[in-house]
Every structure is written in C-alpha cells, then in structure tokens.
Image (cartoon, rainbow over all chains, first blue to last red; front, top):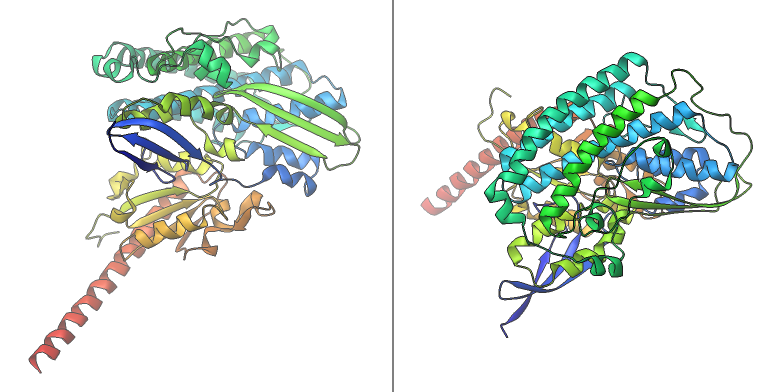
Length: 360
Length: 157
C-alpha cells in the first residue's frame, strides 16, 4: 500500500467555471475516495417564498440556473398551473416545447465544448461554442434575452413566436445540423478523443439505479429515464424515443448528449410543423393557489423536481426544487473511486455539473 | 488602450451566481467575442492573475474563498463585478444567505450591470479594467523607482 494523501479539488479550479470542493484521497496517482463538500453558491432562494408572491417567484425560480433557466420556469409554472387546475392553450404548450429544446441544445453544446476543453482539444471547444452562439441568437431573437429570458408566466407564455421567426428557426436548425455532423465526425472518429474517453469512469446500470442518478448520465448506462415521456408541455403530441447507450463510460455520455442534440433539432422541426397557427398565449389566472403538487421535468442535465405547496394566500407556503446535479453527485463520487488523478477533471465534467442548480 | 505595455491575465470566480454570467464570461473568451484580442488571457491560477472577474453575490461560505483569491493575486490588481448580483446582490438580495454584492468583501473597481450581463457589457468592463490596471501599474512602478532611489541615497550616506 502506498502513502495516502489528500488533494483538494476546487472550489476555484480551471476545469470548472463553478465552485465545488472535493477532497480526493489519493494513493500514489490513484484516487481511493472522493469526499464532496458543497454550499459555496447556496443562496436560499426557496426561502424567498415568504417575501415574493407566486407570480414573482417565477422570475426567482428562473434564476436558479442560468443555463436551463427556461426549463426551471416552465417546471415551476406547470406545477402552479396544476394547483389551479387550468389547461394552458395549445399554442403556449408548443412554444414552451420549442424554447425548452432550444435551451437543451445550447446546454449540450456548452457541455460538449467544455468536455473538449477538459481533454485539451481547444479547437473543438471553440467550434462547439461558435455553433452555440447561433442557438443563443435564436433565443435572443425570439425573446430578447440571451440566457435568462423570462417568457414563462403562470397560465402560459408572455411572448409569441411569429411565423417568420419560426422560419428563421428552421433555417438555423439546418445550418446547425450541418455543423454538428462535421463535429460528430471528430468526436466519434478521432483516435485521440477515443483514447481519452473510452472505458474511463464506467458505471453499470445497477450502480446507477442504486445511486439514483438521472438524465443523460443515467441514460449512458442503459437506464431508460426521460421525464419528457411523462407528457408535459407539447411532448405527448411529438414523436420521440429516449436515447440510450449501454457502455456507461465517458464516451457513452458524450454519445448520448450528441444524439440528443439531433433529437432536439428533430423535436423543434416537429413542433414547428404541428404548432396551431393561431390561438391564445395564456389563460387568465384568478385568485391564489390552494393545494400542493409535484412536477417533474427533463432538463438538459436530467430530472428536475418541483414541489409547490400553497394555502390560498399570495405567498406560497413551501417551494422545493431538487435539481439533477444534486442527484448525480453520489454517482460522481462512486465513479471517482479507483481512477487516475489526471482523469478527475474530465470525470467531474461528464456528469455535466451545474453547481448553481445544486445549491440553489 | 493605446498605451498598454503589459498583457493582464484574467481570473474568473463564481461567487454565488446562477451560472448565467459565468457562461457569458466564458463566451467572451470564445471566437465570436474573443476578449483575448485585447491582450488579456484567461488563467486558472490566482497567483498569475491581474484582473479578477467576480460573478454573483457573496455568501457566508464563499466569503473567505473570495478574500483568499484576492489576497493571493499580486499587486497591482483590479476587480470587476460582473452581473447585477455581484454589484448589489440582485434578485437574491433578500435571501437569508446573501451578504450583498462583491464589494462587501473586496474592493471593486468596475461594475458591469445586467442579468445576465451581456458579453458586450463584460468586454466593456474588461477594457475599463485594463485601463485601470495600466494606470496602477505605472503608479506602482514609480513607487518602486522612488524606493530604490531612497535606498541608494541611504546606502551612499
């Protein structure tokens, strides 16, 4: 047995833009144990329900995370809408789906870029982020905001996407698809990428189930878990299958996210084809919510979970968010055991950590 | 900008932001906006950094970390608060765990507002910071010169 020592990882670390602290117990170059400590970005936004009413909370919830901001707002709004017992107009459902999938695309492109940066492929990193700007331009065009665009409200959406913008979305999707096909070749045929990702950080299906991991991280190990199949927004009206890989290594996680990008493009095309030409954007909400509801949505990182409890007053009694990264941290710690120290940065990246979500 | 003699390096730290400003800071460094053409470079090491970009407010857990990062940076140094949370606490101002903006813990030179701050605004902030850095660097050099002169005089006497 070699000499054991503890190496701190983070909170400030070049690989991640966000602070997470992990104590790595290493024996020579091999990681024996990983002990995470979180709380560097804890703001306590769930506690704001005492000070903000249920409409204002939409904007607070959207700022749980800047990357999947739209999906946070959507999950919260759907939960409150269920308490009110209202059914939002079809056009609003489709608009939510389109924005949600655009958000998923920019999140996955961001992750692919960071992964490329993680294994030292700067060129690929820049390519991913260059394509991502096109997707961000769509968000800006349709809503006015690049990242945080508050278009959700309880009862529907605030802004419409006119027909000419839908056309621009379609042409941009064509362009992005072409670029992605080029990038896919590099990600999956380049031997240096393969040697860095294949067989690294393998988790089996049983391990994933035991540790409760969610999202692409779980799907890469063969677990079929996609909350979109539960049928919120316009997903029941669209045709798609969860993307799964059986290998459970870093390469499989990369594969799942890359395929999900193509899936998102397909979903956006379907949604644009099926969206009702005219219709209301929102239903009027009267009074205050009374009751409780659980809502689950599929974010780019996995299943996010919202619990809303109200008692007929403008302020909610309790609002709880459980975000995908929080569910994936036990899986990460299991994965880090018995790996090389040099792989730690890459492995932390492969769960697509969003610490802001985790700590709220 | 014309009289820049050094290329300052950037250090980015996420205080307690929602991630929005962080990825915009990263987007600044990628081809579309490319802050590196201004002569700055991104680094992960506080001991090599000259400009600190803080995003998000300060909470009780990260206060020491931010202070430590600031102390580890060599002088002269400039701090840019990116995003409305780093300026004042923003939407999270009333949260129980938020102490306020970055200026509650470290002296801030440039404030970049916005939620999330747009890359153009961040670039503007960086340009301002580079100017301040150059000015401080000149002052610091003059001080060192002065000190050396005084020491030489002392040795002669």
